[in-house]
Image 1: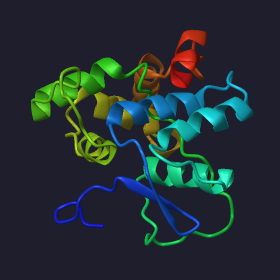
Image 2: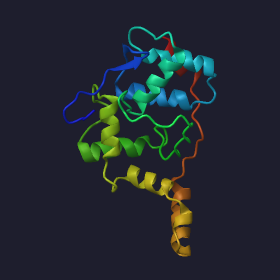
Image 3: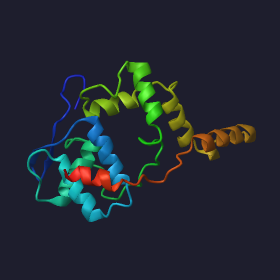
Length: 188
């Protein structure tokens, strides 16, 4: 897919059948928060995740969840297939909860987009703009410091300075717990 000439997808494919899915960025931030919430039992989580399908829900639960995961990660069916070996989960370098201020302000500053009032933005557009934020924005600085491997810094004083910054911008919460109200809202 080339975002310069192709429309962002509005469907996923499960076992060769096409299914329309939610595409607004807000819904995918909620999706991410649900997936990360370790207090929601997996069976309930699977049921809740099926709400991202707009019309029909695929019979193949595993395929349905994988298709949603690929949509979240902006993977297309024709993307290069990776090895069957399970991939190591990427290091978490940002949080939609803890970094909301920096994400919101970066979109306002750089793109003039008010994420509170924009009526709709496709998840892939949001992600593309997020990835494309300049390194000078606070959120990108925080991501850079969180992702810096101190073992690659030979100078002791510089390593100490970076470690101090990392401690200051470290993600504080391991996982956000969804409230009963939010879980109930997802069933509504």
